[in-house]
Image 1 (cartoon, rainbow, N blue to C red):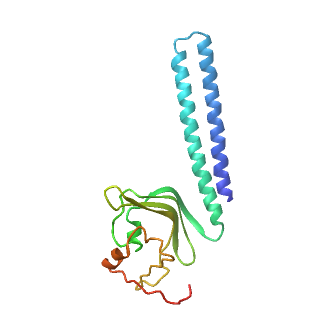
Image 2 (image 1 turned 90 degrees about the vertical axis):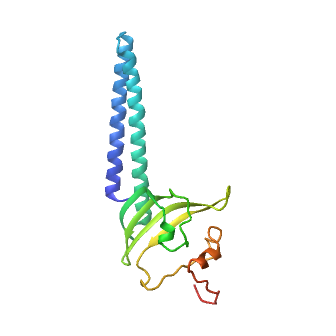
Image 3 (image 1 turned 60 degrees about the vertical axis):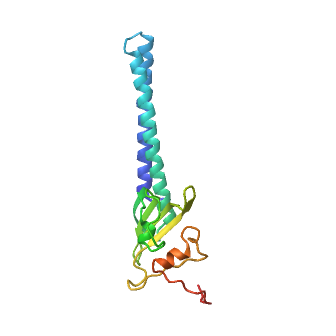
Length: 193
């Protein structure tokens, strides 16, 4: 892992240990107040429990986010320069913008998870886990999910290509929808991949 990621993880673990120490001190004060029959004993016990639950949950969430970011950056390695990582981003209209499906027919509210953005010598890229839903009838729902890798600027701007190996979107959008929206169906030819 990168040194900055290790420093961040170490700092988060140190903060978590200090929160546990504060929780322990609050619990000991609460126990002393209970044994001494103070009026404030029960509210102090409730406060100690709430403080421990909230601080523990926040610490775990921050550590999980930092570990995930560090592992994602480590998986990419030194091949790409990682610029940002987000645990979730909105993905409404992403498939339509990239030309993968012909119409805005997805259920709104799609999210892209574990989004890693960076750059290479060819341009900027993004990698994320996505899931899209589409209603195809009163009770029927079609789903499309997986890892979406987007890299803009690879092809010349005058060309617009969609490469679909083994037709991964055939169950999500029918070929008639593609043709109605101006897509051209090419016949299979013996061209090398």
